[in-house]
Length: 217
Image: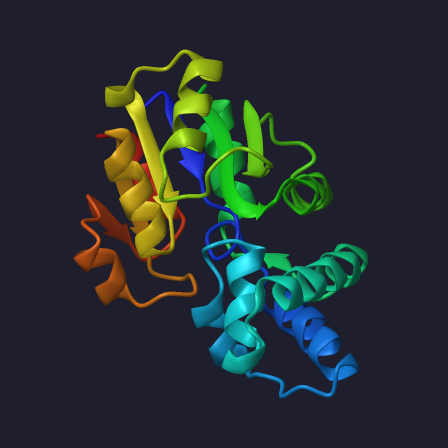
């Protein structure tokens, strides 16, 4: 029986691409740099803000100092505009409510910076009793390193065999594999289904209700 479900945030619980794209483009525009499309940003995200900024910058400008400067400005702008276009995917609030009512422990493991992760969870899921809400923090490696999953397992005391990781990207599937837990890929996120298959997803679900179905197995 599954006792713990760990969710990725962007592309899994929340559709955040609109605010990410607008914020990054605003920072690029302030520097008179080329901007990108919604579809571009779907491919840029998933490995943390530093990689998002690096991918958005023209290649000649991807120096450590420039990336750090643009990241700083992006985080400031994005934090102030983080929930303008962002919304939970249809069916997600109902899924979280059902799992919590059934006594399943819930957690968030994101590569988004910690303050942004916490702000979005408070904004959209204030009533959900998450056991842990973890984002990118200094000294903690990003997914697909399993450190964040290991931390959640210690916090909740749940055995690996009774945990499930839910995410929309190959990074999420790789994280679950590295931690030795099952993974469920979601088909409604930012990445193609083929990426989830190639990354070894245990299951792929088409809608949030499919996660509840997996818990019953």
